[in-house]
Length: 315
Image (cartoon, rainbow, N blue to C red; front, side, top):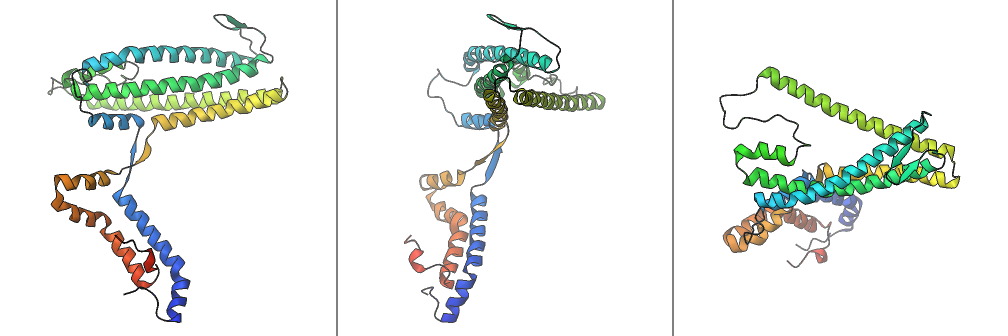
C-alpha cells in the first residue's frame, strides 16, 4: 500500500484531521519515550555513589577502602575550615547590618578591618556577604562530593558492625540519630523512645526551616532598606538588587546541588548495545519490546496517508 489518498474527499479529510492525529501520535511517542527512558530522581550525592558502584580498581592504589577514606579526609577538613571561616565572617556582617537596621549599634571588626560608622559601608558589606556566600556554597559542594564518596566506601566496604562508629567519626555534623546496636539483635528501641525521637527530629527540621525563612526575610529587609536609603545614590540600587539576586542564585545552587533532580535513564540503550555480545539471540526480541509499538504506530499513519511514504526511513 502506498499510503497516499485515492480521492479528493480523502485528501480533504486527512488535511482537516492531520493536526489532531499527529498531535495524538506525538503524545503517544512521548509516552513511549518516557516508558523506555524514564526519569529517575536522585541527588548529586546518590548519582556519585551509583557511579562508584560501577568502579573497578585496576590496582591496589585506588581501592575504595579505609585508606581511600583517610586520603580524602584532610582535603575535606581543609575545605570545611575555609567554609566555616566564611560563615563566621558572614554571620558577623549580618549581625552588624541587623543591629544597624534596628538602630542598636554594633562595632564590626575582623583581623585588619574595623567598621564603626556603617553609613555607606553597609552597602558594600551586604554585597560582599552575598558574594562570599556563593563562594562558600561552592566550597561546600566540593565537600558534599568528597563526603558522598566517603559514605559510599563506608557503607559498602567497612564492616557493618563498625559503620555507625566510623560515620560518627567522619561525619560528626550529620550524626543526628543515636547508634543502633548491631550485635544485640535482642535489644531494640521502645515505642516511647522511637516516638520521642521522631517528634524531636520533626521539631528540629521545622526549626531549621523557620530559622532559614527568618534569615531570608531579614536579609531581604536589609537589602530593601539599602535600596530605600540610597546612601550611595545609584550604586545603592545596584548593590541592593545584586545582593538579592545573589541570594536567589545561592538558593538555586543549593537546590541543584543538594535536592533530588531528574535524570534521564538510558539504560535500555546500553542493554541493546551489549546484547549482540552477551545474548545475540535475544536482541531482536528486545528491540521489538522497545521500538516495536512505535514502529507499528508510525507505519499505520503512513498507510492511512497522514505521513508521506518518502518520510519513511529505509531501515
